Image (cartoon, rainbow, N blue to C red):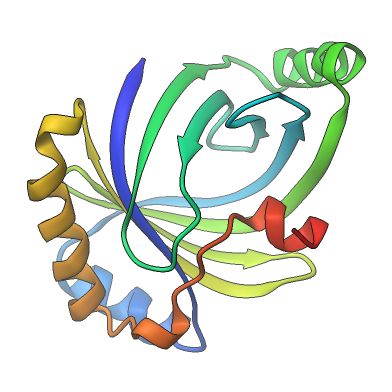
Length: 173
């Protein structure tokens, strides 16, 4: 399934306040997921296998590193079970090698097509992510407006924005 995202990631010290703001806005809380993301060595973009108690997916994406809202082209394949995710992780590690693993506790919320993550990442700290999700790059302006609206609503400041992925931060890139 191909998707187009406009997204931000930011450090936060206001997780409880941001959680309350999301719930006050009627966000649909999907749960807290303990996720392990296995990033594999690939020549271009990122290939990760996400294993969690809520989300299991094989995800390929291309995204520029920048602090503000950024575009991503994402291919996502749902993986049905933890056993299949574990088997895929072993096979992909054999074929490509594992570059880095990211271990996090993630609260997942939705308001319409916008997904919110309140993350506690082992070795990195607390973060908030906002992902405005569309089906094509033609929706970019609308998705950008949504992302900026929720940045303002949730009090995300420019100085808190993070340009790199958790994998880059953990690997020292």
